[in-house]
Amino acid sequence: MADNTASLNDLKDIKPIVLIGLMGAGKSRIGRELAAKLKLPFVDADDEIVKAAGCSVSDIFELYGETAFRDVERKVIFRLLEDRGKIISTGGGAFMNEDIRRFVAERGISVWLRAKLDVLVERTGRRGGRPLLEKGDPKAILQGLMDERYPVYGGADIIIDTEDVSVDVTVNEAAAALSSFVAKREQK
Image (cartoon, rainbow, N blue to C red; front, side):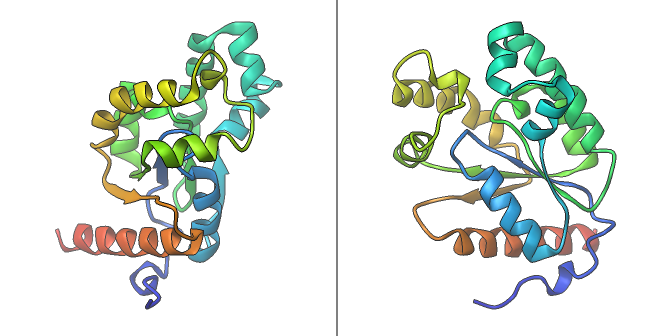
């Protein structure tokens, strides 16, 4: 596969690339690898939320509830979108917030990492720390989240399917899609 970063050579001034998708879609892993390939900094919004709150995402949910978590998440993502030339991985519910969607549309390039249910179930089963999956059957919960969120995620600037392929394949596909998106935008 050809290196598709030719038109992405100087990315320091590109809008932030914002990865969206359900838990297990690969936002953190793909984000780190894509950032390395494009020589951009990578920021995981959940890590920034943990720093801001001084406790884990699970603890925020347990102690303060989802509403408090979403408020901190919104503030952190707004702050992250202030700087250009980076890749931001967001939590699965972030893009459901209308204010965040609008701000991402104004300030960033949204990339939906879309995955099928069985892929998500397998990937999310590898580790804990996913509060939304702790209160029932993970497969049923993920299906409900897909039904609710996939129509909204469909408004992303770029959609990349993350199947059971190597990370490199997905990263190369994302880099090619970004290159094409940037080239089309520059022609306008």
